Length: 347
Image 1: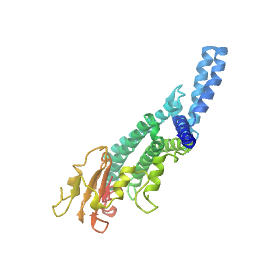
Image 2 (image 1 turned 90 degrees about the vertical axis):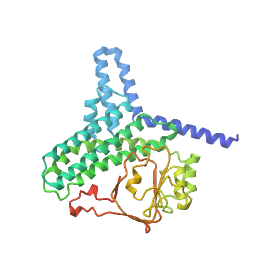
Image 3 (image 1 turned 60 degrees about the vertical axis):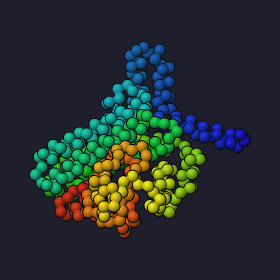
Image 4 (image 1 turned 45 degrees about the horizontal axis):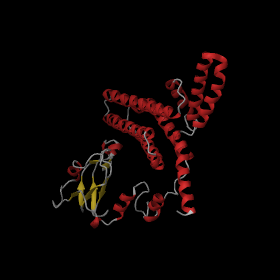
């Protein structure tokens, strides 16, 4: 091995080492420093001071965790109430996730109660959408928490990007819930906004915390596989092909012409495929597939209302061109349909 190769290898190992330390939380150094200062005084003041020192250390750890958040007071008060004497940054972040999840669930229960009391059809539709959206929001929080507490250092950068994406989605679902009350004639929208205020602030704080950690992590762009992903194939905005978050195998798949792609299921209006409707085909899409599952929708006009569930991961849908394969519908807001349900294809 040449000196240059050895130098690059050591540099990569150093990056992984530094990144792993920063991942736990950008506040670890602050928390450890507090603990060391307190330990130096414990022998002088006995168990009473030790207890006080633990509380003080916990408070300072919470303040450090909440430092990058927009709703700092909300963050500190909720964590201090639930954390007890905890000073472990990773544990505090887990607690923050749980608190946000609890608040969103409470908002979902409120939407169910208001729906039962509402007689206005548009308001009831908005409240029904909120129930769905709150469940989806909680799902994104749980997925984020699982990733944060059980991560693979070799996928550090991707993990942070995934968590930020899921947290952003959780916040968007909550905002979409409130958007659904546009032009309603009751005060249910105001009540929901009030009931969701704390949950939305806590969710925004989680994104701030994770973003703060992410910004402190050195770039891993020097890794060879990252360079291959960036340089070998065009990405969205630079050739208008597909986004950078797709893995190398999927990008290869998407770069291939339709004629060269072997579909798992084919939908064709003329009966030449596996199914004649997309809706029927979706019933046969595997849940949580470990590899890309290709659904080819041949040329035709499909008047269908579709729901691609969250569990249909790694589903790749291809058509025969935007002018040839068309999915249409006529659900409109002016007809009393809630905005969340007006899309031809909803996810």
